[in-house]
Image 1 (cartoon, helix red, strand yellow):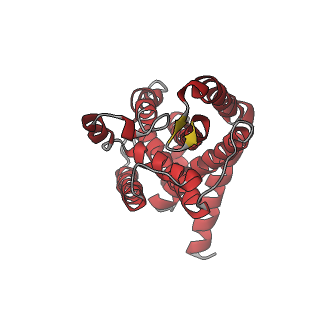
Image 2 (cartoon, rainbow, N blue to C red):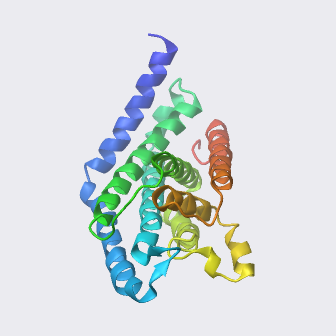
Amino acid sequence: MSQATVYWVAYRTIVTKEILRFSRIWVQTVLPPAITMALYFVIFGKLIGAQIGDMDGFRYIDFIVPGLILMSVISNSYANVVSSFYSSKFQRYVDELLIAPLPSFIILAGYVSGGVARGVVVGIVVTLVSMFFSDLQIHSYAVTLAVFVLTSILFSIAGFINAVYANSFDDISIVPTFVLTPLTYLGGVFYSISLLPDFWQTVSLANPVLYMVNAFRFGLLGVSDISMLHAFAIILSFIVALGAFAMWLLARGVGIKS
């Protein structure tokens, strides 16, 4: 058996395990985001949105749909990897991966692919739910799909890094609560940054989620506060930086080897 075949079997095994892990408990992993986003559509889109009126030439509910879809992708991609990899540390079966003749990138790719799978599944479900509330139109399929997948990859890697450093189950909820949630809500999901004063517009540009939300909004609606070149440059830069850092952590055995 060639080395490439061994690597492929190992990668496929990790991905299969990750997909089965969240699909077996879909009532806990897929259904809740759909219900939560449906409530967002009803409350912010129908009730409050009717009072706000149009934004950037679109009904308010149509304007926030891209951000809400991406918000579900971000949170579920992150949650899948951080919980799964920390569980492997807690139950000590991560040792089997470490002693196997596998390069670090296979382990990382396997867990990240599992996170992307859950993010994509939840994103598709939320998109289907949104169709009951909004006349969803896709301006650019290429941009929409690219942002969808790249964002899921980015936050899957971020979840992996969180899991590496986590020493308890409480630790895996700190970053989502105190970092991820504020960045998401302040990332232009519910508003255009053009409505903000100049100072706060400048501050908002330091939020990486802003670029992802705007790029995804451009893919669906054709409007954005950020240039697509700048948005994709930021997203890809974060993927490369966090991916390299995650590889380094795995190679050094940080938080894993006792």
